[in-house]
Length: 137
Image 1 (cartoon, rainbow, N blue to C red):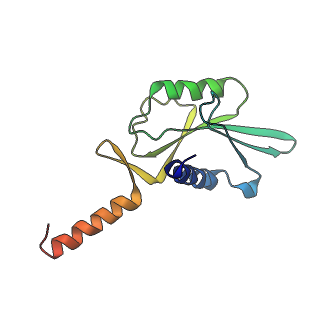
Image 2 (cartoon, rainbow, N blue to C red):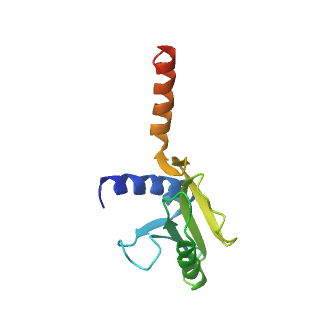
């Protein structure tokens, strides 16, 4: 993966770890780029049973129906106990059906139809505030 993609997936993994902590036995398995499988599979063994979660990541202001269908197909295949879709905060997820859990990444937001890193939004607001105080805005 490249630099931006690496940092994005680091944020994805941090988001997933909040809900599926490795301390509770969850293991992450990332799929190679371009595969038909979900992008990540989480699994753990509890009381002799293996739990599996299919994870798909969509960095888009509006989640495409075909991406949801692919995740739904993976969940319906019987190989997974749950399906999770990871999206930036504020993404339009109206096409996502009931059976798929949605996790929003707080470090990425949809602003004016574009995806922005939250730190850039905070930094931009701070710069605008400083410029206004100095009479430069």
